[in-house]
Length: 242
Image 1 (tube, rainbow, N blue to C red):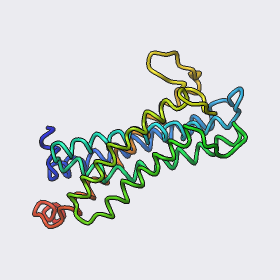
Image 2 (image 1 turned 180 degrees about the vertical axis):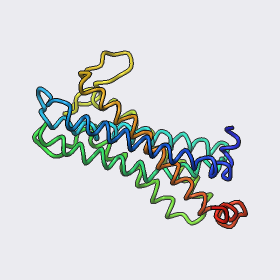
Image 3 (image 1 turned 60 degrees about the vertical axis):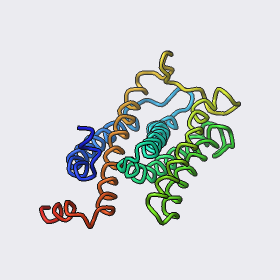
Image 4 (image 1 turned 120 degrees about the horizontal axis):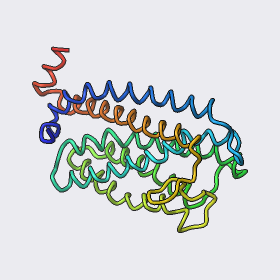
């Protein structure tokens, strides 16, 4: 199964149904989780209604980091094994990572004003997330700036791997440095610091955003495959049959 999905032709055909179901489940889950968090969760004791921004901010921030880690892993796979689908994934995921990081930054700014009294502060967490946005932007820009696809893929892979050092900085910035951000409320091996009434819709939105974005990335990969292999017989045959 893995070897078949590593083939551009088989991946293109097999991912079509996955895209539909991931979109459907993701949108449905986001609608449920967002409505739950916005209208049925009580105001938080200290933050009031501003805590509802959490249902966008936390999933977007978490997903942005996971996308970057996935791109860095794909970059290593491409350098070691020259797997073409790894480069296709990097090309498809980088713009989505930039968008999710932008959502995390914008929602964080909106949350910061009523919580901290300022829109933005150059602390370790916000600054490292801003660097993550520029890394995603750099991955996209570097690919467009290099004409030869093979060289572009190698350069993007190197940048993705080097930039991965920023991920642990983001995660542990609240422990290593003095910041306004509170420590993580959900960590493996520790008691969860969020009441269940707030936690359940957060988990629904987190899982649903992962599912939806997986569908978006798969759809982007299918588009990229068409652009790369538009002169091949299997692409022509697919368009004739569909």
